[in-house]
Image (cartoon, rainbow, N blue to C red; front, side, top):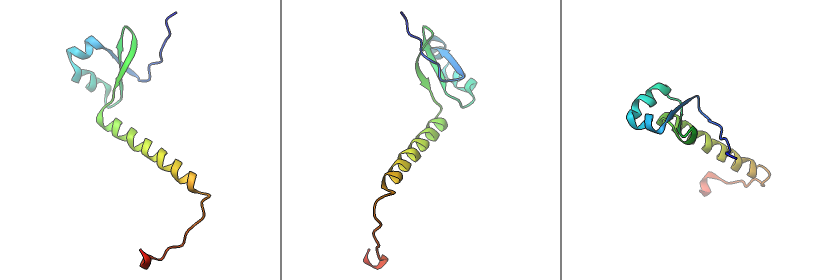
Length: 84
C-alpha cells in the first residue's frame, strides 16, 4: 500500500516544470514555499531566501527560549561590574 504525504505548501510544481523554468515557479509563489513533486509526492520544498531567513530566526528564538526556561530555577549570582 502506498503511503500518502501531506503537501505543506499552497503552491506545488513538478520536477519537469521546475527544470523548464525555475524562476517562473518562484515568481508564482510570491515569496511562499513551493512543494516540488515527483509522481505527485513531495520530494523537497523550494523556500525563498527571505522565508528561510525568517524560519531560521524563529528556530533560534525557540532554542534561546528553551535555554532561558531551563535556567529559570538556577540560583542568581551577584557580580560587580568592576570585577569583570
